[in-house]
Length: 176
Image (cartoon, rainbow, N blue to C red; front, side):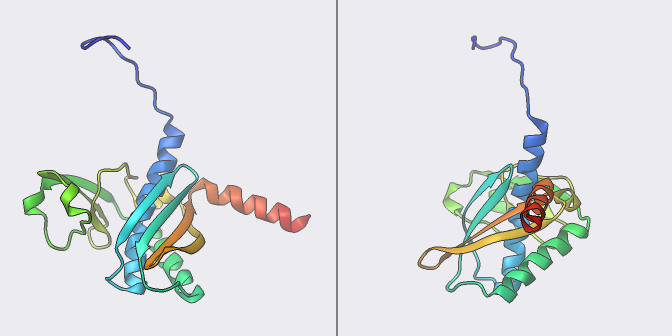
């Protein structure tokens, strides 16, 4: 690359970015659904967002029962169908309302970005890229739930067109 002030061309793989946006916003949906089903003690302990999946680590004291997983998945999909807007805005950290979920408090600067899903569901601090509307996520399915360490669980999930690909692969396997 050249020096300061030189022209640069930026190319963005829009389909990859859109897939990442779906999975990133879905982590917020999942976090909300986990808190609804398992309780307010749920706290994000890490995440990974890729074009074809998401991984969400969270604090919880026991494995999640199959019925609870089903309810979490159903709640998440109901939120997606609600067709709510996803809004982001910046505020001074000192002015952050109490209801806005914030973790890792010592890592925030003076200005923070609030991401709100539907205004009443998930409202968290986040600097990531997101869809504009929950319906853009196109569906949510949990593929795995495991223990990471004592008191930390992990859910892996997928959204969007990846669900169609996985479903077609599963149907092909069943027919064979």
